[in-house]
Length: 392
Ligand code: SAH
Image 1 (cartoon, rainbow, N blue to C red):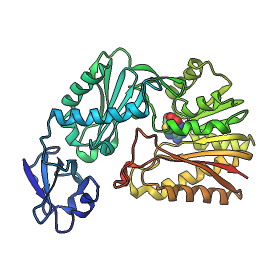
Image 2 (cartoon, helix red, strand yellow):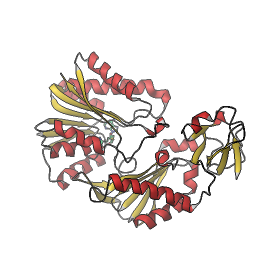
Image 3 (tube, protein in one colour):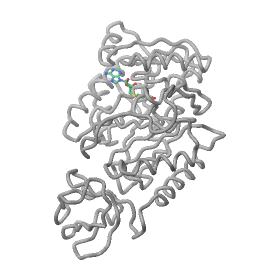
Image 4 (cartoon, rainbow, N blue to C red):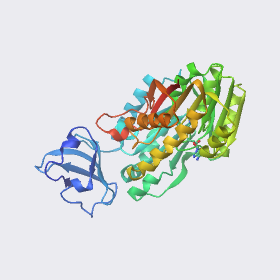
């Protein structure tokens, strides 16, 4: 196995729990080692630090797999996945749900690997060249542990280009006739399509936050902006909302949204298929008001470079929603951009309130569900912010 060496004093971050080494931290960036190959990492003073994946071209040169000198083989991956599963069984046992995030990448010490379990289908994403090399092994482990009907690879993220990986989606295992399946989370059923749904097929990260809005939903006139397959709307409806309106730009998503209302025998729902900015502007024009508005936009920035324009977009979306709130109404606002920290997120909403000459008070905060754990030593693993405010 090849060895790579850090520059002087560059070991501190990785010894303090971070799992990546950037190319400028290495004393040299060897070009003969292939993307994704296993290497040993040493400090400048020749102390062993760990084993991980190497990439000669990516900004992230090294992704840590183990801090011990152990063999990295099929058993290694099986043990890590089994550990990840044991934890999920504890927090989301089968009696409660048939869907959870099984592996949340670095947070489960499996760099660049995401696996979601949706009933009888598993959905996998790889973000590192290293993990891509182990796909066959991962498939065998998942088949042995879960006997799934299908394993789908949703490798469409632009982030893969940073590792020189192609963008594609394909069926890794099983029959191709239908990737539809019914999942159940907190007594709500969703028929999702693991090949067609966004990202891995469905957003499990908002599961706990969807429950938080229930206490504000009784008899409320609700607006769910960026509704996707209906996670927040269905919880609001179950909690006794009077009327629910959804906004989403994707027709297929809205088909699934309405289908999920039928599946749960819930009604009093309408939807607007439009760009959210446009739809919100139109609604402010007709002076319609809502008692509860959920605003959960897609990530508006994938890089630090675009953060200013993303903040402007968050602010204008929040301003539009605040204008549509009844007096004493509630705003549940979220941001899933990692680069928008919680401070920036709250500050942006504060400025949105000031600029609309309203006062908001913060009632509750949430973040990503516990099957998407956060490593305090790796801020990159935390991305979802969620807060509920009241207009007063
Ligand atoms: N609230 C959802 C998740 C939202 S994901 C949940 O609880 O699961 C973001 C959604 O925004 C997707 O469904 C996508 O179709 C939609 N979307 C993306 N860009 C949009 C735009 N400009 N206008 C309206 N909807 C958009």
